[in-house]
Image (cartoon, rainbow over all chains, first blue to last red):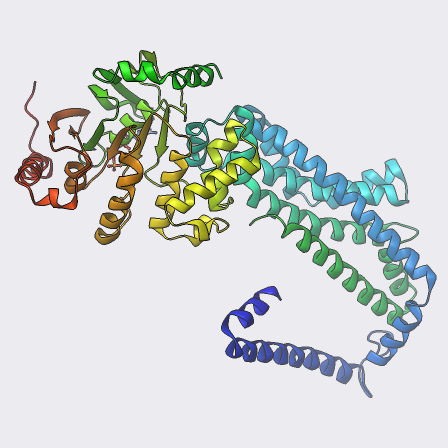
Length: 263
Length: 283
Ligand SMILES: Nc1ncnc2c1ncn2[C@@H]1O[C@H](COP(=O)(O)OP(=O)(O)OP(=O)(O)O)[C@@H](O)[C@H]1O
Ligand SMILES: [Mg+2]
């Protein structure tokens, strides 16, 4: 979005025309998908219970957004995501900074963190269900684990891979050990840390929705799974749309927040 | 920390500085540097002895890899010498101290995540100068090299020559006694080199600091230097130290004088040995 706006601004009318073309083509793509959907769900097509028509989904969506149950579910899901992310990210950054400051700590913790990062965190979920039950805490902790690993891992990697010429520069200009850590090493590691945070945001949203779908008594993920389980397919589609919008908003807010940092 | 206090102490006594004007201010005593590598120890600099007076400009030339940067880093305290020591006004230089010796690195090393202004203010930031004051000082310095319009740009948005000027004023911001310049004009084309050279001349030479300049350009070495140190390789050593007696600051016309031309020819002959790979005469 912003890239297009910038191109348009910089290049004047040529850029504007390009932007227009881009959006026209995007609209066309959406229209094609909608057309294919309408055709498939139309007369002689797939049964409603497998693929409801667009008007049916729209009608369901219209009644869902008036339903306080859905708003409570959305609030719960969003709250779980926020708490899980804040928990996982702060712990990830603290652990990453602590371990990344010393070579020994980094080398001891790095393989473990890499492992935790590689393993899909859903394997830990049954454990959290056992310990904390079906409520929100199991989702929050499972999603926090999902956010923690990429952030901790990337923070350590970033601190370990600082270009030695920047460290040399810091020393030459009189940086104390602390200033070297904060102003030079952390600055140099920032792009890695931020990419860890981006991955953390994405994994948090996936984990919360998945957690609610697998075992819960509330939340949008729960509503989604329930709708399909009782074959209320149109309602399921409507919840899907709401979830897509919700995740889109979360990403938008995250990107806005992250763009305040350089890189 | 300790060194910091001491350095301010001798800065506060300009008389002590003046009394030593005649003798050597900076003494490089039998300095040698070994690197430990996977294959064992590698001698980058075998042995260098050099006395440098206050306000003197010393150029260092020599083939690539002969240990020029290593020696410069040792002088500034960045690489502790394996043998010998570096003394400034009787005090051994143990660790880097930007008030005493400030670097302009071969690769400039501007921090890509900081603005030009904050890059120039880096040393002041480490010293604990308040944000407002250090930015004001950095802005003044940027003005002297016509970069004030780029104060809030990031290094990636600057040309090579602009980055080089920023790196020079970053070092000047420390108001050091010694400026260590590692091929500061290295990445520039001939025209920009000359233009920058003339610009930097005023900035650098009116300050009464010791300047040590590494360069691959014989012209630059002779034009700037009170002395030209010619280094040889494998392992790094001083081949010859050549006096250039013409008073500084020198006008561009100096390049047309016999002294310049003769000195340049002599250095060219010396460096031809390196190109031919002739063995150095053993001493
Ligand atoms: N950190 C290091 N570890 C091991 N060897 C090194 C290290 N730094 C430099 N060397 C070696 O020491 C020698 C001298 O390097 P140095 O950078 O001082 O050369 P230089 O004269 O500055 O070369 P150039 O003109 O190309 O900049 C080189 O052979 C180089 O390979
Ligand atoms: Mg070098």
